[in-house]
Length: 167
Image (cartoon, rainbow, N blue to C red):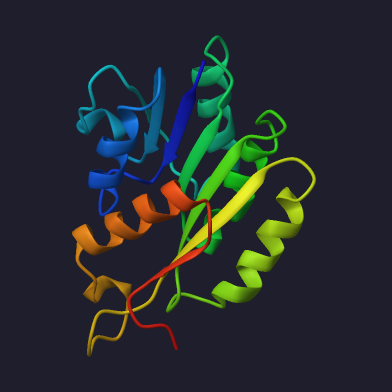
C-alpha cells in the first residue's frame, strides 16, 4: 500500500498536495491547523514542527495503526529540522522524501547536503529549492502555481528542481 505524508503542504503547496493525493491509498497531512483543510479521506494531524516533542508525539499516535509512510512531501523551515528528521528516520527503508527549501531563508545548498547525508543509506531524498520571482526578493514572490509545478516536476523526475531565480 502507498501512504503519502505531507508536512506543511496546506498553504502554497496545496495544489501539489491535492494532485499527488490521488495517487495514494492513504494520505496524512500535518500542519498547525490541518483540520481546517479538507482533503478527501486524508487524515489531518494538527502539529507544529517548532515543538519537536509535541510534533513527534502527535505523529506517532496518528500513524501508529496506519500503513507505513512510503512517500513524504515536506515544507518546514530549518527551525523544524529536528522534528522532521525524527519523524523521517522512522520511515521504512527506500521511502521517498521530497523536501521543499526556500533559498532566501538560509543556506539551502548546505542544508540540502546535510539532509542528503542523513537520508543517504535509508531514504530516497530529493529537494525543491524555491528561488525568487522575477524581480522579487524571496520565494514569496513566486506564484503558488509555479511552486506546485516545480514540486510536481520533481515528483515525476525524482531529480532536484529549482523554481524561480536562484542567487
